[in-house]
Image (cartoon, rainbow, N blue to C red; front, top):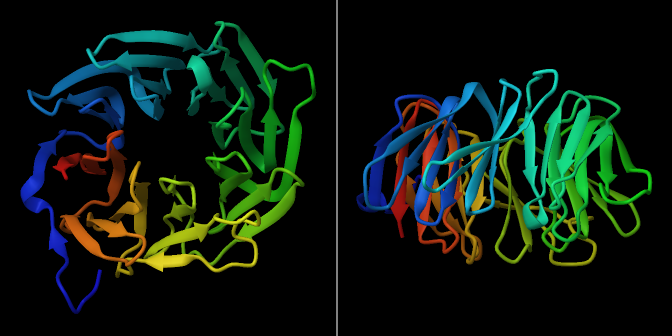
Length: 333
């Protein structure tokens, strides 16, 4: 945020919310925002109406994803739960050994993936469960944008797996611990955030490696721009955006750097339709930043706790934010 000028503000269009507990994620079901609390419950906040808490897990919630109609959660109670907009909760999987389920992914046609230790499970659209053993504990899961193909990160690389195929899983190797993982929207690239302050990627057509470094901290948040031309990331005292417009991706190119600030960016979330990215910093500041001219709008002023979650509704008309101490809000654009 520039020290020379005060950016425009959306503060007057913000509905403040106090969850009364730490928040770890946020998702939209239509115009209803669902805040995932660190322990046991979800907080449903409709655009019009009262907030409502729903108990989901008997312990910590370790992961969550949404398909826009339901919120899927995983917890240290060894369960995968699914909650709809009405607050109805179903348990869709329970680990036989009651191990922590620490990662989850949502795939095409209702497929679900989750992990417990070194084991990864996929429930196919037909309701069949497949299982895969990784070389080490899973660090992240994601489905490819097309076809039933899962990427599971672990120590020294990523395993690519077609659960419905007889072919052996395929390894993309690179030394180190790989955590978060994402496919480019066109399916041509696979990117991981590592334990070290860097990203690593592969061009899937030929397996060529891409090393994206220069961060001051571990990258904890990744988000693709509306047309898939930019990958926004946290891990620095500004937004780091890697270019993916060409067939080479970011190879040999420098990232675009936006919204420099005195604190590190903690969470990024790209607008679903426009070239705008929301960014939350470690002191609670939330900005909206336009990619073409770097114009900034304040959605939340700095406070105390780091921003823990950002989420857009599907139309890009509502932005939800939350901080680690349970303070949250919904901005109407």
